[in-house]
Image 1 (cartoon, rainbow over the protein chains, first blue to last red):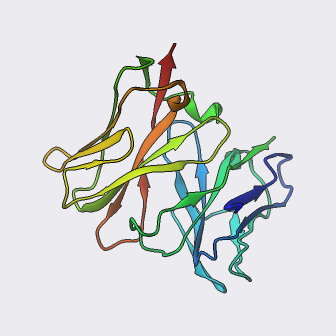
Image 2: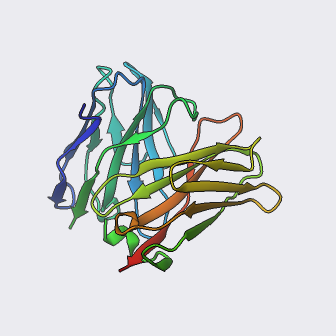
Image 3: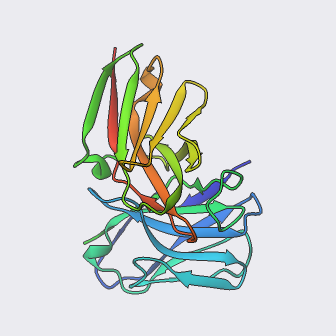
Length: 116
Length: 112
């Protein structure tokens, strides 16, 4: 059981380049989400999805796009990378959208992105 | 990862001692709280949770205490081991929302 798998683990981009961070889960979870983690700050929600074909914005969505064509995959796209997007990105999933002891949030191991 | 921990408070404890990690949460309407452990280079890992209708919950070697009066949450780790070295952070979820609010974390260092 792989859980939540993120690729790549590390990425360096130049300003203006685009890329996609991949996230896949094999737990048949309905809810998937993307967070960024920056020094001195808690995890901040970028985008989330409550099921295939449904996505919505989180706290810091600007500069990022997502899609959810299947239950398993939830890629995060940076259309034109900026130095402010240098961060560690985590994908997380849970059975239900609602925070609940029966539906804990499972995290991947992150993608460390540097934009120069 | 290491860069995330640059500005974190650090708690150093001797191996075998008990550790207490504290968290002040922000929203008095929060009704569900979770503690996560994050090891270097890895994603956050669920440790234990508690609902607001409880003030204490015990797991294996861990206990979470909730004081709603002062909006304070603590994580107690008994007989701390080297493998407990990590960043620990709390999360709260305001009632009626689907939102997690994450704290910034505390680094726990276990001294041999």
